[in-house]
Image: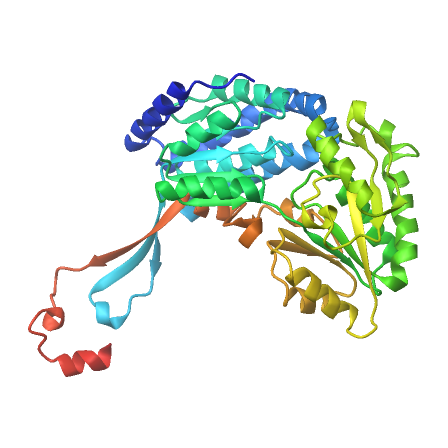
Amino acid sequence: MENTSLSYISQTLAAQRQYFASGKTRSISFRRQMLKHLLAVLKQWEKPLCEALWQDLHKSYQEAYLTEISIVYAEIRQHLKHLRRWSRKQAVPTPLKLFPSRSFIQPMPLGCTLIMAPWNYPVQLLLNPLVGAISAGCTAILKPSPYVPNVSQVLDEMISENFDDRYIAIVQGHREVNQALLAERFDLIFFTGSPALGREVMRAAAEHLTPVVLELGGKSPCIVDKDADVKLAAKRIAWGKTLNSGQTCIAPDYLLIHASVKEAFVQAFAQSIKDLHGDDIATSPHYVRMVNQKAYERVSGYLKDGKLLYGGRCEAASRFIEPTLLDEVSPESAVMQEEIFGPVFPMITFDDQGKSFSEKVIEFVNAREHPLAFYYFGKEKQAWEILQRCLSGGACINDVIMHIANEKAPFGGVGNSGMNAYHGRKSFEVFSHHRSVIATGTWIDLPFRYMPYKLFSLVKKIL
């Protein structure tokens, strides 16, 4: 992709400010019309987008639809169903001390926004935030990833041909374009990517005191306790770890497993991979490749950090890495320090000698940055007790990944894994400012607040 000219970025942002100031984007009828338009456009461009996802990532139509397209469809429909209610001003109770006033909360669009998406789910993670921007009444400049050039090209054509760039525009390019965008003053920056890049975004936003939504990542732990249904756990974990070939911000990153079920899990995991992808996963139409050679070299390099229990086959020419279980890994090794973002799965084994398994798990997880996701397999009661003591962006009990699929529940990180949340109503809210409004009647004007504060002793009791 060629870099968008820096002059176009400045001119487009200025045009969007004028368009937003005109009030065009604020009416509910306009927002609903644009949401319906986006839904129709996405249906029209569904096939080209899925074909581009195959070209860039070897992502099958089924996986592309389930993990990208369908999620955006559901998000749009959720906003169309509830937008009128979400956008109404809401009356809230008013204390006696403010008589004769009434109090309201009024959702207001923040204004001109920037949405920066990564390459791993390039359609979903660009268009899902856009739904929130449209719903709230904002304008948006979209920045897809250059690492998936075919997808970015199709998105460029889709947006440019169907939306006025004074309202929704798309720009392309590498680091210099990102720097130019971040040098501008937006009213909100929505960024999905790594914690390292998230820090750069936040530094740039601080120059203009711009609010940010940071959807980042980190090392999401997966716990398999002695009471887990091992075969089902292995099946669901194998699915979650091979989905997009592990290139998912909420993929299970490392496994903490009870010693009593370790051997059974390894066998069940190996069988689950075959059940999901056939005898040779390299020939599976549903197994994604590493996005580029740099990613391939980084992830394949983790194989030296432990003992291979399963997998380990790599093919540099096709950027293929077989799902791999690693044993005997050190907590200080690279594979346990960095977000893997690939199909390598390190295992750490605990038992109940000394401290209980759950105490060891809690200590291990809490000694690290707050993860974006937390997965536990075992008895639900025990899961809730552990979750009560471990902070994470989201969590699943006896499952992985699926919490992102509920458009009615917020999705986001905490600390190193992100800031703020979206999906459903939260998407509308994060692109809005919730303004407090006091409406005071003129039919009476009580003297107690005015100097020289007569009857102060009585007012003090009321306060």
